[in-house]
Image (cartoon, rainbow, N blue to C red; front, side, top):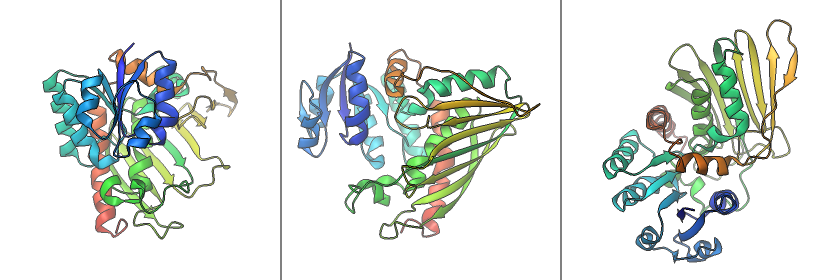
Length: 324
C-alpha cells in the first residue's frame, strides 16, 4: 500500500483516479485544493484543504490534477519534498517548464511520469504489440477523433475556458492524448505539428472549441488529430485508426477514462475484418497506477516531445487570435 496525496480535486480525480487508487488497495492520505470542500469530499484519511505543505508531509506519492498552468510549480514542490509525482497532461505549457520539471525530479531522485492514461488501456497495449509484431506492415498514417460536449458546469469561471490557466481550449486539453498515443503505439516521436482552430459553437468563451492538427513523426508516419468541445456524447466521438501497408486497425471508445471499447483489424489483401480481444474490465487508471509504482510509466523523452510540438501550436493559435 502506498500513501497518496491528490493536488487538484476536480472531476477526473474524484470520478476516476481516487476510485482506482482505492480499488488497488492504496490509501488516499491527503487532498489539496483551493476549495477545501472539494478536498474534503475526496475523503482522505489526513489533511484536506489548500495547504500543499500539509499534503506533502502526509504522503509518499502525489497525483497532480491542477489546472495546467500550476503543474510546473506543484511538481517542483513535490520534487523538493522528495515525493514521487504523477502529473496530468499536458505536463506543462512550455518546453522550458517541462524540462525544469523533469530535471528537478531527476536531481531529487524521485519518480516522475505524465498521466497519459491512454497508454495503459488494455486495447492500446494489445494494439501496440500487434504493431510491433508487424501485423499492419509499415504504419504510414494515423487518425484520431477525440471529442466531447463541454459540460454545463464548465462555466465562465472554469479554468478550461481560461487561456491563461489552460493554455488554450480543446486543442490544449484533448490533442495531447492523440499526439502521445499515436507515437507510443508506433514507437516513434512527434516532430512537428500545425493546427486549424475552430470556434463554431462556444463563441462566448475566449478559447477554440475545436481543431484539427496535422502531426509528423520521425520516420514516415503522419497523423491527423481532430478534437472538439461541441461533439454530442451520443455520437461516436473517440476513434483511433492506424493505417499500414498490410492492414488497418480501428479502436472505438477506447480513448477516454473508461474500460472497454472495441478493437478491430482489417486485412489489406482481402479487406476482411476481425475483432481483437483484450481485457475489457481493466481500468486504465488502475493500470496506470500499477505501472507508475513499478517504475514502468516514466518516459521523459516522449513527454517532452509532446510538449515540444504542442507549444508552437498553442503560440500560433494565440498569435492568430484564436485564444483572445
